[in-house]
Image 1 (cartoon, rainbow, N blue to C red):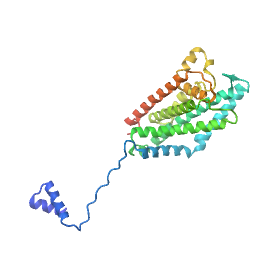
Image 2 (cartoon, rainbow, N blue to C red):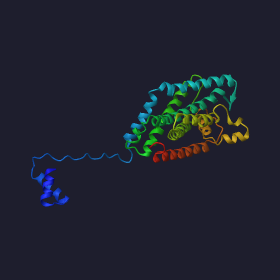
Image 3 (cartoon, rainbow, N blue to C red):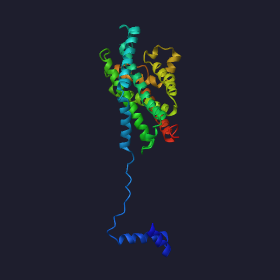
Image 4 (tube, helix red, strand yellow):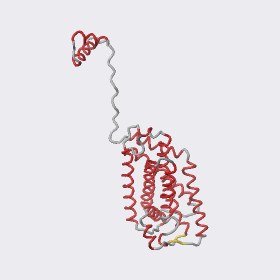
Length: 299
């Protein structure tokens, strides 16, 4: 500072000339330590794969740390539904679409557990982060809107598929499930988990307290799950209600997975496959928009 003051006061140097003068003084003294250079910014590329994987892994580990609650409990609930409805309605004699009632019921229960747990994973994670005030920990890192949305949705899909697989394996000793159409099982299982993971992300962003998420669960997710042919064939409904049931995307998810596992269905499989894909695109666009705008995420 003293050197700069002297040179400026003595000769009236302008800033550019001052820098040149100081650089010349440094160059004339080779024993002086080299000037520190700032670190170069890290190049992340088009997608921050490390950040995406880290956020996804954080969300997966979050529900695996309480696997008894997040995976095993839904399996037990599904087995209880299977036992109760089979004893109450089936008793080994009731047949639906030429199948024993228990075999008809099992794919619907598997889909229902996938739907409910995919929704619970993303909605609870985002809402808890907002309530606790640590949502900033996932907003500050260099993650794009696409990476943020994909990581949360993928974690929800992972939990949904894991719960669905565990439920199916737990039912095998009681119900002879098979793989009638593996491609249908894969398509509808992925889309079922993704649909509710995105819906849960949207709900978690919108909600301000746990009552809001409970309202979405009780008035949207559960009714649509129960009224979508989980426990019965929609062909048994009156004509006007059967028509309404075909507007429920959950119906096509359950119907498609039932076809993939046991080979029977009530609806149009091609139309259902296209419909659930379109619904997921719309939900993705909405979730992406909410995250990009910072709606109820940023102060």
